[in-house]
Amino acid sequence: MNQPRAVAVYARISSDPTGQALGVARQLEDCQKLAADRGWTVAEEYVDNDVSAYSGKARPAYLRMLRDIRSGIRDAVIVYNLDRLTRRPMELEEFAAECEAAGVRQVATVTADVDLGNDDGLFMARVFAAFAAKESGRKSARLRRKARQNAEAGKPGGGPNRPFGYEADKITVNPVEAELIRQMVRRVLAGETTRSLAACMDAEGIATVGTGEWRSSTIRQILLSPRIAGLRAHRGEIVGPAVWEPIITMEQRQQLLNVFAAKKASGRRAPRSYLLTGMLRCGKCGSRLYSAARQNERRYVCLSGPDHRGCGGITVTAPPVEEWITAAVLYRLDTPQMSDTLSGRQATDARHTELLAQLRRDQVKMDELARMWAEGEISRPEWKAAREPLENRVKTVERQLSQITGTTALEGIVGHGMELRDRWANMNLERQAAIVSAVLDHATINPATIKGGKFDPNRIEPVWNL
Image (cartoon, rainbow, N blue to C red; front, side, top):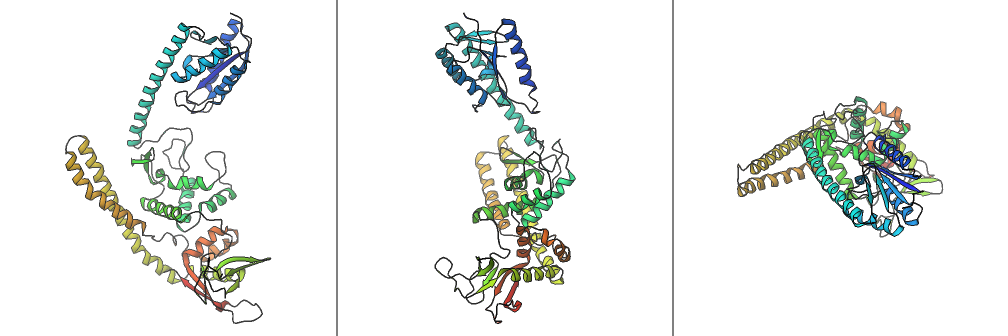
């Protein structure tokens, strides 16, 4: 048998939580030593770090090595152990076929050689692969059971990255990031978009957990995570309370779920370009005014035609209307009427809290029923009879919760009109619109009575939120 002159060294490790590739480094060192002892020339090292050979996921370096074997530029293979090459019998057969077609007969490991060119060698390789697949299956099952047990105990999951809002142990709350999360919650509940929040976080130089920029999806993932409410989830299912402290309340979590569900139902929309889009009405026909530009002038216009069904009789220049309504909103935030409004809505919040407590009690009862049936304390018909009324009540309470808005749109801004006025110019448009819509239901723009295009504030009739 000829001495190989262009050997491929392959190394792989299925899990590398530290990201330091120490496992593959050790494999490569031993493989290089084996090549040196045999006088083989290593042409290239092919490394798949943190990739399982059992899961079926693509392994880029392995596929590249197969292409090089197929093209004839590699004449032998060295791996630390055969299970580093594959843990799937089907994949072994494919590898053996590629080697046979290319005339590659020598596959060396640190522990034993395998000659894929004869029946005995291929048989032994198949035995190794079948055993490795069996062990991987057992290991996967053990890991799944362990992960489920940890989740049910409220312990944090694996993975190298810490969650935003918590320290590296995934349990201790990071006070600075936790306050940022609470601010994000308040702003989303007040109507601001996750896109706007992501832009603000980047503009303020706030770092993500990784190295990337803030994105709308990143904000949404953080806010919808059960973790920040002190809940432990496993495979998308909430399995119980967590061992760490919550950053937000259960009430706030439910309100977030309601807000995101409503946004999903309404569909996606383009980024806001006008402050009062959707908040102005025509004083002639009552139709909504639409933003429209003419040359360099921004305007709000009542549009006629089948798509808009307005009368086409009202047009107003945007900047002075936006400035007047902004000033009125910020002034109103500091008036006693707004404090009364907030107090009135607290009754709604009390009802929200009551419903949420009822929901938790019923969910606990359902869990207890499941435990009793699993342990044989009750029969299946008894379990079903007791569960059905609980399920119906849970659905009713969830529907009632989805209809309650609470005070969140006004929290943090009532009584702060002067402070917001000082910071208004530095806020992005989404944030400004969220504050305005929290106070203003809509404003009617009446026909102009002053000629010459001069702005007349008397045309504006605001209708404030309760």
